Image 1 (cartoon, rainbow, N blue to C red):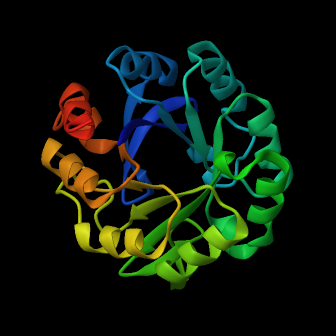
Image 2 (image 1 turned 90 degrees about the vertical axis):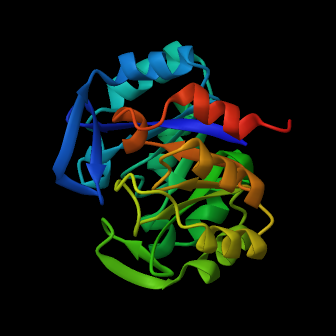
Length: 239
């Protein structure tokens, strides 16, 4: 299982939000410096979120993100504000390895097929942000149906992987809820990366044992509740 530290960028700064609320942002400073630190500590890749894009300012942070993704030459997945095939193509052409399409994938599912056909499914990740079993879109404000049904649909459209975020526990640093993860893994064959609530090596081990392909570490990592080397050790045990 692979570990992807989150580098969430808002107004040019690395931040962590609680429950996706920009007013609850904790600012950590230079995103490039954090990216380098996590890679120095052995991260398998980076999970970059252009939060300004998610909040409707798609072009903000683009130069900064392009610069450090080129510089680091590591596997990078990126989401936030990808509203069109052109947006996704721009990031993929700029050197991002995999784009994450969430709200727009629900609004326009055929976008997944178009991107998969043009760039290959392995570069297209569908984002499934779920609260109480329902996909949430538009900044986690609007429910849009069963997360399991959407997962199956995205897989059938050609998404090479899924990012499952449990909104109920995201940012709270209180641990994961494993049941929705195991239900999802039983329904799809594509790799699933899990985000939300991962706060200890035990959480990482539980996801590894369930069969998750990867885990995104955010708030707990930045707050020092979990250390990256410990998470990596739990992820790669038994390999």
